[in-house]
Length: 114
Image 1 (cartoon, rainbow, N blue to C red):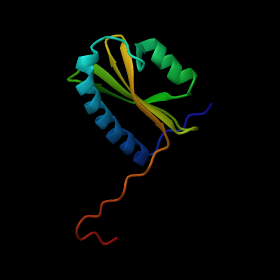
Image 2 (cartoon, helix red, strand yellow; image 1 turned 60 degrees about the vertical axis):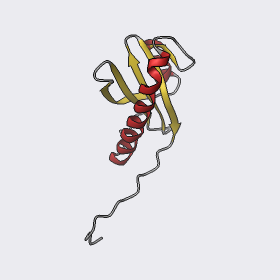
Image 3 (cartoon, one colour; image 1 turned 90 degrees about the horizontal axis):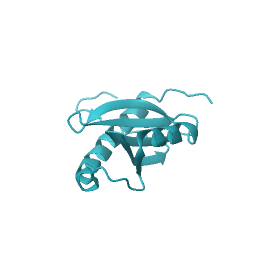
């Protein structure tokens, strides 16, 4: 299975989606604590499932929750599926996933000649 790198526009969309998902998850994380829910499992279980079942690879990784967690965006360029995960300790939770990336609308600046 080949993996193409996502375009800059796709990465921008994924970055914005990741920030929104992380903000939502931060609000929920304190109530979930370290308990496993349907979207959470040991880190290796989630990662191997994303890689082997969906062919997704981590394309963005960034610290979250003031360094207490790791947020990653997984993507399969062939099928255009993507998943956002948050890992805290040894538990990883899938925050949001989907198929396809919609381009961001162009915002024109005042005086933009195009």
